[in-house]
View 1: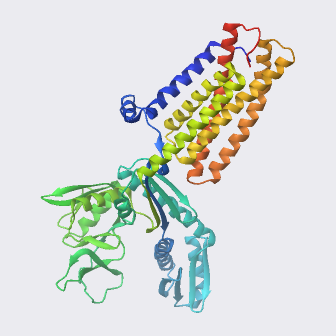
View 2 (view 1 turned 180 degrees about the horizontal axis):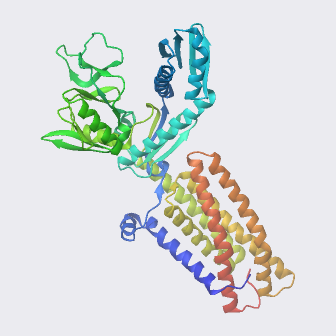
Amino acid sequence: MLNFPKWKIFLVFAVCIAGFVIALPNFIGDAGGRLASALNLNRINLGLDLRGGSYLLLEIDFDSYLKDQLQNLGEEVKSALHGKRIGYQNLSVRENKIFFSLREPNDADAVMAAIRDISRELNIDKVSDGFSISFSEDSLKDLKKKVVEQSLEIVRRRVDETGTKEPILQAQGDLRILLQVPGLDNPESLKNLLGQTAKLTFHLMDEANPFPGENFIPTGDIRLLTGEEHDRQGSLRNYAVHRQPILSGDMLVDAHASFEGSMPVVNFRFNNIGAKKFGDVTRENVGKPFAIVLDDKVISAPVIREPILGGSGMISGNFTVQSASDLSLLLRAGALPAPIKILEERTVGPSLGADSIKAGTKAALIGTTLVSLFMILSYGLFGLFANIALVINVMLLIAALTLFQATLTLPGIAGIVLTLGMAVDTNVLVYERIREEIRSGKTPIAAVDHGFRHAFQTIIDTHITGLISAVILYIIGTGMVKGFAVTLTIGIMASLFTAIMLTRLMVVTWLRKAKPKRIPI
């Protein structure tokens, strides 16, 4: 245990120097930001409770999502029944089910086969004059999981597009999303962006009666209102558009705000598949009006003057510079699969975060000071070695948090204080073992060798049990509990390194240089 090859000595010094360089920008105030930029280094991320910012708890409107999925399923059912030449009537979606009746009761078996061809996970029940179709329990669970995963990704893209850094985003329960944005004092603009589904579709309009007013809407068409345009009576103008869109916004690859003359507009570009489809549709419908629809509102209704073959287009309307920029951001990020609503909102001021940092730093300094005094009073020179290792332990912990861009929260500071005690406890195990070896009459070198050797297994066991606890906390915990677990895990690893490598190197170096007759411990 006292043999230290040169490569091990080099490794210890390299790790300590790298940790010092990476952690340094966090300790020198505003100048740290300039130093970090100059050296291309990061600074540690501070959580909401330390930096201040906004906390939003979002809930996904699963009922709306389920209704859309049932509408899509209804179209599939229609196609399947048409393909089998099965006559049906009164197909409708209500009570989270699809209902329809048969013209010929003898077609019941054929209906069952046609629906099974669509999916074997659908519930098919016979009712008085036909059938009802609904999603099975397993299918509903899969849909909930899918809508949460999609919503998380879209919300993340939207937050990132605003330029906000280090957001904390995670699922809460079945249909809720927790969003924490450190450093964001005014969440109104973010709330506006998150509150829009941003479902963009392109529809052909009813040629015979594109502006129906209160008139009858033909089968296959839907009535949509415009966002701001009014008719002669001062009411919002409504449009009759084909129910089935010719294109959807998921084929967009780019969108950005620009100007057409002096008016803000949004330019967009389709992917290859969307560009070809858009070109074919516009070629076949020259001279006809079509509607650009965002969240079931017509934002623009131009006439197709000529085929649009380049895959690019422009949305014009009553945009301001900000609304055009917001719309382009939403289109780039993509549409939410379902509307979301804000259940809870909190804003933490930066002064409260600064107070938390001061309190946490004060607690850490007091703890470190008391522990350091105890080690020196109890173990003399060896206590000094332990204190040096303790300082480097903290430096390595901060460096690891910075390198991995982990978010430091107030519980994370508690984790740092806890790891300080664990680091010292490791040295106490070794030193007490060395004392026992001295009492048994061993020489200083033999006592130190046996002390480190026999304490090694105990050190490994205690650190592994602590690591298991931290991993379990991270897996089952949420929010700040995860932050505590991350800090604790990194602290345990740093403590293991400083105890096994750094403290032992200092003790061995002193033994070889001083060649003491007795150990001052």
